Image (cartoon, rainbow, N blue to C red; front, side, top):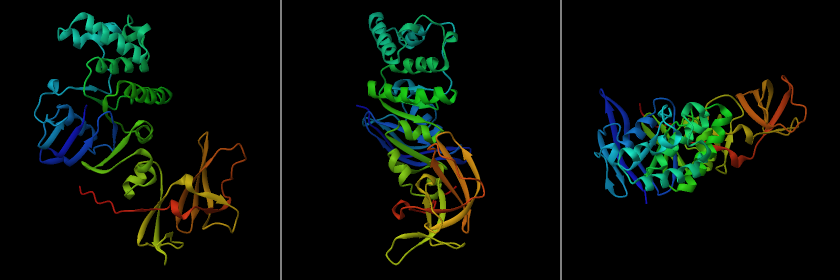
Length: 342
């Protein structure tokens, strides 16, 4: 069991509030990822949970035990940092066992834990190698392995993949999720990559200015963002002014000006249709080829709209072409005002 409960957590520094009253519950075996813009407090929150920063006020409980003032070594947590921090003069096997050896554990038990971690991480053939003989992905697996052998109640990952190239980063995202599923340890992770957060988490925590603005499952967060900030930060969205019609259904304003509502419409939800058959007309001002997709920026009477279409191998639309756009009304999202105070 590893249930984490945070209540009214606050952190101040030099008269500035960095963390402003965080409440959060994380369930046993859950994988929760924190995202937000630089300076939002996500890494500070992780360090507070780890005990690497002092809490100004509030509580952190692990399985009902208050660990707010407990030293990091006694919290039963294991943290993996952005930098691998491997010992260059030691083999992979020695890197994995170092903390257990230092604690004076039983040698047979230590070997059993190292062998099990090596199996999970597919490091068996590499145990006698030094870190300089490993790829970036292999080094990251060793860093994770050092956490696994400690058998902690919670894993804490602080941007563990940011040093990897794009292809390896994507591969390691799925590796981390596979490993977490196999070992069954509650996991908290900080990342600046929204796509990464959506792809591997059970729930995503979006932070802004030291506060949590939304906590949700990845699909729900993407499809039902609560505020303009979340809609634009998690994925891309067209922000459009609108009103409710006589039936209470949101509709985009067809003329410039402020509507009573801010509406969000994802670029991939918009269809390009035959002239005269759409809800909105415009002209393509630029296009981008993204491999599996084409992205079009379209100038309309109410501003620029972004549309994403799957690359189906057909000839793409030309820059300057006149187009009509349509979308299912139910895919328009009504957004709350951003009520985060500085």
